[in-house]
Image 1 (spheres, rainbow over the protein chains, first blue to last red):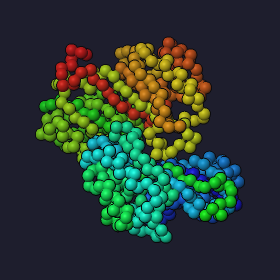
Image 2 (tube, rainbow over the protein chains, first blue to last red):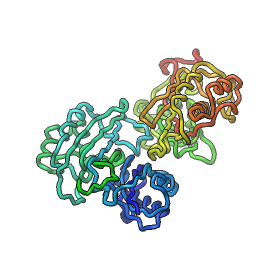
Image 3 (cartoon, rainbow over the protein chains, first blue to last red):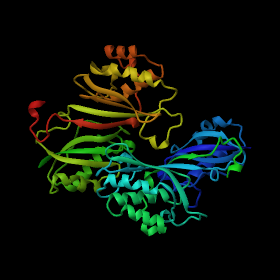
Image 4 (tube, helix red, strand yellow):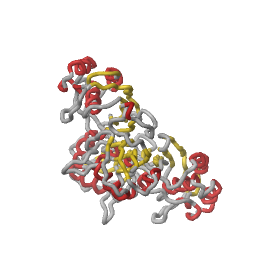
Length: 257
Length: 257
């Protein structure tokens, strides 16, 4: 059996999120069924992390042990015909038997798309967030920097997940202009708490709309109270773009954990 | 009754095209129903031109005579709640009673999105075309210029429409790079024959794939035979971006026709 690292892209619009759960169709479930068509062994997928309902991914990572006759580099070709057209496996690579897609991840990048048109193009409706009211984009730009670095993000986390520590490091947070009305926030960190990216974006939008100030963000970071941060931006603007691992994943990684 | 010019955006994925027809749901039909909710008179919409099934628009134009209490600038706010979320009226302006959205149009711009990833991001599946096989993008870039200017585009037209003349002028045709794998062809002309943009794009892709040469395009333009041009690129990559009129549409336009 080979430990296999998959790079997966999906349109999350019609799914209840990444992880298998009762009463909704999930990406993991569809992937698991497709994998069982090409492998002989029971399938147990380890994702780099969950994504919520309606959240997208262009570079989600997951590892899975496979006993299959398909050569590893041909797995995407063999697997995609068994997947619905809103899920695509883009790459498969063999990794060390101790590689773990969640524990070994050292960096993740998310992209959050926003639209500031009064009447936005409907082709963006499932892939971006249009905040209500008028927004000062310069205020958003100015507030970004507050999140950079290592902070306790306890105030920027939704309840419903258990974590040992709420301290995370943001390496990069940029506000990019795609056009007059389309903007993106790109954020790279060593890990993200539940809904952390969406609460950061929602808080920045609140700053742009004059509902919160930069010092409110600082206070929310300092006190760790969810009520001091802003609203949770909706899921459809969010894309998990990249998950990074420390070294060539074929090498033994356990020492680095 | 006021002659009203509407700017309309739509995601064409789930429609049989712009124009009302039996056995499929169309944009015009949905728009007509919504307009009849805010106006007292029978609705007769004049679009700037048709778009095919699955083709999108960010700036389609149409004029319609309306007897309504809604002030013209408030029409988008009044109308959008009666439209499905894949059709949005972005603007409404009063125009001269003789203004005609099709006859008075002098320029149109289309955008055609392509993807050259082996395993493209599924969020693009309804909004771009992924040609099969490997493509030389420089060849596409080099071939573009052949279409510029005034030509008889008889060979770049599908059957099924009646036109007086097949001569058209392309003012601009550009190949734009959105990312490593995402490209767009932007094309502005004084008018387009049935499927003309999609056949131009398909022919350019054939050139990129080595199936046709620049001199084949020249021959197709000269001889006007459809069989000499390339394939018809699929509809989902196409967006009608802009329709231009000669002067302030409130002014009398008939003299200029």
